[in-house]
Amino acid sequence: VLVGEDEPRPAGAFEIRLGQERPVSGDGFGLVARRARALDHSLSTVAWRLGQGLLMRFEPVVGEEERFVVLDLETGSPHPADAEPLEVAALPLTGPPLAARDGLFQSLVRPSGPTAIGSGASRLHGLTWRDVREAPPPAAVLPELLALLDGATVVGHCLESFDYPILRRLAVRAGLPPPAHPLLDSYKLARRLVPDLRGHGLLDLARAWRIADQQEHRAAGDVRLTAEVFRRLLARLRRERELDALAETLPLVAVGIAASGVPERVENATLAAAGARTAAWGQGAALLARWRAAVGAGEAAAGDAWLAARNRPVPDEDAAWERLRERWRSAVDAFREAGADDSLPAFLAYARLAQAVDFLPSGDPSRDGEPGRAAALDRVALLTVHAAKGKEWRLVCLLGAEDDQYPFWTSEDEAEDRRVLYVGMTRARERLLLFWTREREGRRRELSRFLAALPPGTIVHRP
Image (cartoon, rainbow, N blue to C red):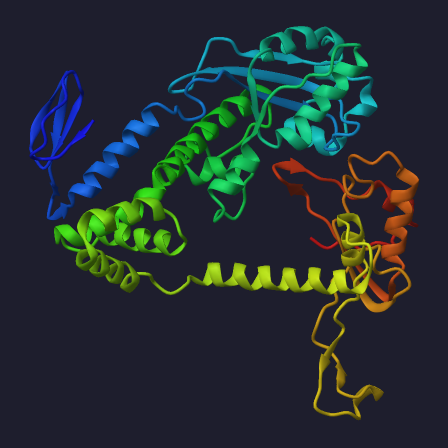
């Protein structure tokens, strides 16, 4: 029960008395304005912080109650569609604070033969056929590994795109039920929580947070490193959750700051701006309505004017998103006017086949024989391979010429993927540039296997 300064306390209630300092006891405590160093905080701010703490106390952050197991595979190939494991490790975590338990599972795994170990993969982790030829096969390793994963949320870096698809394929091949665990991919989580980093590979994160300067690329070392990175990510997740808690009360906190007369700087200024912005979005409208009814028309009008004065101009990011949304709406409206089929598949086909913007408006109708249009010699046409069919250019840059793109790692029709690559390459009249990356998403990549069929010397490699 929240009790005002002059209100009686109901019998047996846990009392939070506002405006009256009182130590914490079994039946309640008192809240007063807080002075932090040289900054006063309003009573509404103190109450908001308290409410945040109480709310977060009864809604545990992910990682505090769940059981996690960190998983990593080292394989003979960077392509999850056919990669065979050479080593596996799994590390159970218990929390809080998600400490590693004495249950590390680690095993070498024997692949089908020496040819299953590519030279690039071997250079990365150092494992050769000599290291794994006496190891147990996957079918002998899987039962103990799956038993360890049972009932847990599985964590891993690039887990969803690499390690877990391989694990499912091996289980099916061994005649076991395909695993279906809740997954947490630390690569995807890092991209969302720390978008400003230049890279989100495991080593990128370890270096950014000064956890380690090198990566072993061995299963046991990588699961330990992933566990450390995962702890840092959960700490950021807790901070993000704190900012989201009780956001609908921020307008009320802001008018409380105004009413208290505390200096509008540092945290007070941040909360005032946040309250004004959330009020402009319509959040906390019901609480503001109750506040207006309680304080009277004059004070309510002054508070509303105060909020409006602090509603800063729209940030550049919000303005960019608004422009993108309007362009999207315009494209959808134009599509719906052009045909009778307004289904999502029809719209996606329409967008895929849209023509590239190869021309710019010109004030000279005589140029290039097209009134009002001029060739855009300083522009680049960006198309999908499918949309480029039937077209040619002097120079073509083909991106992603990697072996998990051509063929795509989930593809079941390698011949069709070969034809797609051929279409893209033959769009060039004079020069073709193929771009591929040696490492992406924390995994080593190889040049497309289709290019190996070209005559020697056809492709000139440039670092």
